[in-house]
Image (cartoon, rainbow, N blue to C red):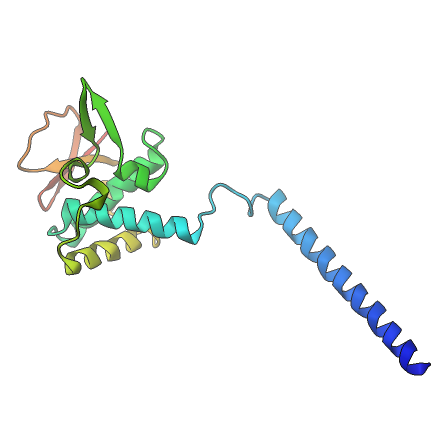
Length: 180
């Protein structure tokens, strides 16, 4: 009889502890949701972050593989500035792979995407791609920025002249940067 009584007390105690844990957990989740710390659209999944890193690294690689560190950062910074501007898609990959049509001509935001294989354009230098990925991580994950390029939204190589009527910020490596 004593064993049954002890077992009954054990079961009741266990049920009370489980109920208490569930109640506390539910209240904490409710608090986080109400304070917009959980369920916010600002929260990015690991899969999304890895996809964004890959898109950003590919863009840096194809646009600035042989540029100095600052030139690679400049390309990354323009890409992120566009995603944060409200004038371009909010998603980094959507910015990188954005195409527009002007007078029946397809124009890409970044020329490498329209040239050749698009998203499937091969990585020919593992070393340059690894450098590009390191810069992508530094800029996207660590928030590294070049102060001079804070307003930069556009750039082009110094061997082309697009005839833009934009304010020039400066030149890094072979790229000339502009603000809106």
